[in-house]
Length: 106
Image (cartoon, rainbow, N blue to C red; front, side, top):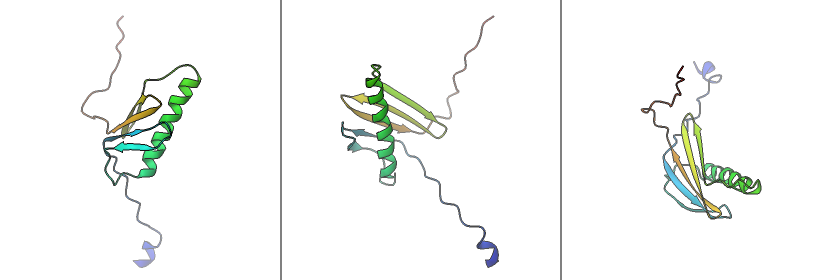
């Protein structure tokens, strides 16, 4: 049996995404967070960096963004611009609400 275990390695545990928020200043430093300490700091910084770059790109294109909403299958990210900084909300998608569907009237 030991022979087979060398071929089949245990999979890494999946990261459980928690709900919470964090705020960043203009320089990309985390000011405050409500995320648990088990949530990887590197992931918080990466999400914040992407959000800040998106807001800056909008200003450069003269299309300033006030709010950014990103839907992933297992995570919803909502970010709001705050005078150069941002506040970012992370939440699990609500599976109990039906998706919006448009109907066409003939």
